[in-house]
Image (cartoon, rainbow over all chains, first blue to last red; front, side):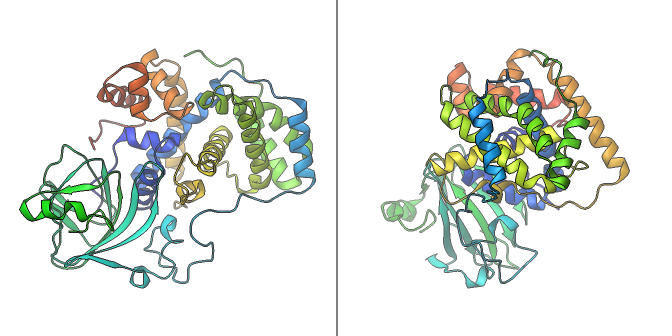
Length: 227
Length: 195
């Protein structure tokens, strides 16, 4: 049962294609889990379609038309090559794994190059976005705690496996959580019964708070969550 | 928002032209689709990058070639032809920006937007969907100008909420609430969440 959804204005930005791609990726994973939000985005796409129709038509040259016709006559059915990870079909077709992440996780979570960033956290980086955001997977050991931290930019978290809680609630598979600089001393804790795996997109390095956390801040290099 | 001029082609016509392209590789049907959509697509690109005519021509070309190549994937039950073309155009625009380093290099539009197969919809849901589509269509031209302006900047100009707030000299919260009000009027959302 998904309880935490993106706000409607965020879904609108997704539908318009105006979100940073790291954010759009988190929202896409949520959509793979959430029929209700999928339906909403589908309706929002119609806004784009109508607005496109309202635009004043711009003159198009005959030579452009000739060019396009020549391309289809020549049978140029080449699509731009897909970016990102390899396009080989995933070895494990885990229906559980969101489709948009499969290229990065071809053989399941266990086969990823997890790096230990603290006694209870492992991380693996998936990609960067041009706005300085970093997309990572985090694995928090059952019952493990993330050091308390503040956010300097926005942090988006999406639960892929297990569950975690913070002072504001409990989050399970498919839930999406947005935290920003107004959320002080954010301290997620994984549930006791299973490891929690999350997808995160972090806009700017988070700042650890508390006496020991402050000592670590200068050393945060490898992961936003190292502590 | 002004009402569009009498459209040269209605939804059924567009649908049947796309189907002719898909099943017969009908070049004449394709030309008619080109004439209808190319000027709108060019305008869509120019809305984001005014004056960038070469970029706009490139987008027109890319979307129309996609239409030719993917016509067989178009499902009239799932989407109205205009909505389908809009999603092609949006995805091409994202990929264009990505290739030119204005977006993260590792994530492509297909990854974000390829269709999720929902279980078949019941006749009731399909009727419901059609009703909502008509409602969106009707209500969009009735929106107060400050709401339709924010939607146009989001969808056509591809601006983020922060960019819109800066440009219109408004607090970010005001931009968000205008979007929400518009969505409520279009009956896309009822009430809402606050994340």
